[in-house]
Amino acid sequence: MNLESFLQDILSQNISREDFSLYIRNIWESEDGCVMSYHDPNSLCLKIWHLSFDKLITEHGHDEQPLSISQHLFGDDNHISARLVYDPPKQDNQKSLEYHCHPVDTVIVVINGSGVFSFICDDSKQSIDIDLTPGKTLFFPSNTVHTIKEVGNEGLETLNITERLNQPKYRTEPINEKKDLLIKPSEDFSKIYKPIKN
Image 1 (spheres, rainbow, N blue to C red):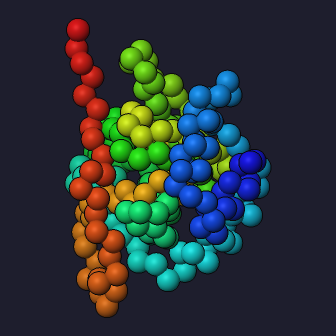
Image 2: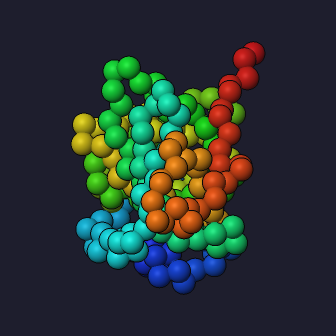
């Protein structure tokens, strides 16, 4: 299955968790590595806009880090989940996002903006940096250590797709008539990476 078909199947919710995870692991273990390019990211935008049209906008991130906003598009604990995420540029007085991992297989599609994504693979403890531009698509299995190392001046908008719900805690809870529609944050959303010192 090519990347375009894979992403269209996800957005149409026509793919199983098993097939989703198998596709990610095959890409991760391939000679080409964990990065592919979606050649027409604008073609995804209309479908994403339809999915996000009436969804609640929520805020995430530690107080000392840039405030990220996202919209949960679909998914739950038993089905593939997707969130549209906007990460703003870091201000001088803010900390960078730490290296961390999630307990879910993940695909990240860059929709708009730019930045640098970083993986720490295997036991090498060496980071691999990847420049992010629209259409760049990253695949990584659960518990892969990673971070967004830099965000460009225009910010970074991504579609984050996981094998099941992986919702971060809210920085501030929305107070409006849609509050009952909030997705419950995942207790196991992420784990901060702490390198073992020799």
